[in-house]
Image (cartoon, rainbow, N blue to C red):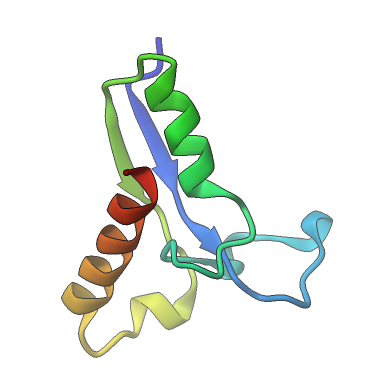
Length: 83
């Protein structure tokens, strides 16, 4: 019954799992500690056909000079990981 999955990565190596909050949530990349690509693969393998939506709340993402390029890089990495 899932229709939309929100994704964001956490890359800060120093933040503990219990301390992770919205300001730590960035675009998904190769340093993602949350296993987004693996979770997405598991959902797809189980028949999920819905949408995935980015939810990076970190100020560093909101202040990117070229958010389009950063989104493309993130999407390219995710696509490569899902193959």
